[in-house]
Amino acid sequence: MAHWIAKPSRSKIIKHCVGRPFLTLNEWIWNRLPHSVKGTPTGLRYGKFIHSAVQLNSDRTQVHGTFFLRNRPELALIRSLAVQKARGDALKITVLACSNGAEVYSIVWAIRSVRPDLDLHVHAVDISEEVVQVARRGVYSLDKASLVREHILKRLTSEELTSMFDREGDSTFRIKLSVSEGITWHVGDANDSSLTRQIGAADIVVANKFLCHMQPPEAEECLRNLVRFVKPGGYLFVSGVDLNVRTKVALDLGWVPVPDLLREIHDGDPSVRGDWPQRYWGLEPFDSAQPDWKIRYAAVFKVGSPLDIHEINFSSSANKISRPAESKRVTKALS
Image (tube, rainbow, N blue to C red; front, side):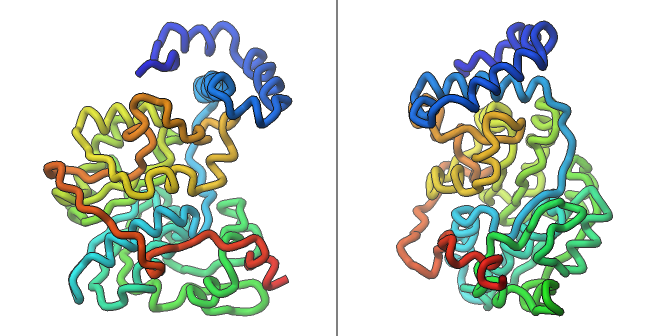
């Protein structure tokens, strides 16, 4: 790629010669730039420069912060893949780094809302036994969770909350049985080859929001190993990873980017978009001027089969999971 971040000598200069004072100064400048300037080509290049410096100077560590219905366009794509299955078909999904279960339950709810007839099997994996226990229990609160330090229900409308949960008390909610059945929870490491043998390959593998917390060489090795979890011709969802790492692996392994909702999924999580460029996990703005943008910004890939991706029809409103208006936020509805 053409980005200077890919040149190790310059990276070492930033990390070892200028370091934190240099980064602090540039963040100070960035915070005072008008939005009209930040959105220009020059502003984007400056933001990428700051972000690469942030990545080089940050101590990366795994975190468990997440939300229900975190990326609605991504869920819409998963739902549309499920809709194409024949009546009564089996559908196997693996969710790696499942954290407290919010992503897993969101996926199951999205599918069963339109295809309750499918024989849905979901394997949910996380390396932390503590968060797996929380996920398996399926009980959440409107208050900020101590383990994830987020209001994980805040992006739900009151209608979605009612559809997904049974209410227990004033602020406690338990996942409905119709959403939790068919899920098998595992404590395991995505890099462990024995885990693949244990759970087998899946039609859809979701590996979001954990590779960015690894150093790039470690993330690249793990990402290359994830194909073991995907059936030939299956789909790999992989957001929350350094874009340079994901692009390199996708090109090396011949993954086919899924074009449907590509930009919408990239912009679908306001948390990571809003954290750029000042957090190492932040996600840069979509930039179609990038020569490799069709693969750089793709978060969904078809792996292990020829280039035969079929068109996915999103014309039906049943396949959409639109972002609710601010006036319908559940925190307002229940206040």
